[in-house]
Image 1 (cartoon, rainbow, N blue to C red):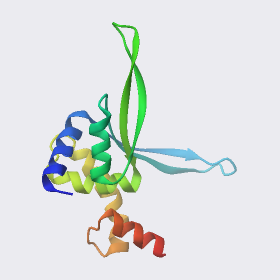
Image 2 (cartoon, one colour):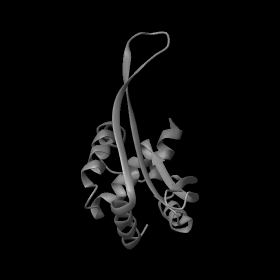
Image 3 (cartoon, rainbow, N blue to C red):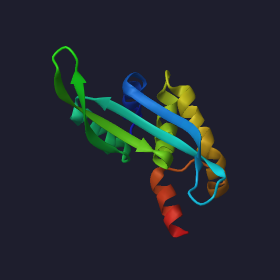
Length: 140
C-alpha cells in the first residue's frame, strides 16, 4: 500500500465512514452468567461501487455488499454499496489509517488499544501486517 492511497482512504473514511466499537453483556443459554462481547466494525457507504471496490482491493480486507435506501421525496429506492470489515481486520485497517486520520482518530485509537494488549504477547510488541498475522495464527 502506498502512502498516498492510505491518505486518500483515510480522508474518505473521515468523511463517509463509520466506526462501531461497543461492548455489551451477552447471556448464554445454559449458564445464567453474562459475559462481555464487543462489536467492532468499520464501514463506508455510498452509491459508487467502483470506489468501494478499489478500497477493498487496496486494503485486501473487507467486503463490498449492496444496500438499498429510500429517497423520501421521490418515493423510490436507490442502490447503495457498503464496504465493511470487522474485528481483527478492522484493527489492521485502523493501524494503516491512523497516521492519516483526523476526524475519527479517537475511535480508531479505541480499536487499536483493544487489540494491541492482546497482540503484544503474540508478536513481542512489534506491529505486523495482516498477512504475517494470518500466517502466525494458522501455524498454531
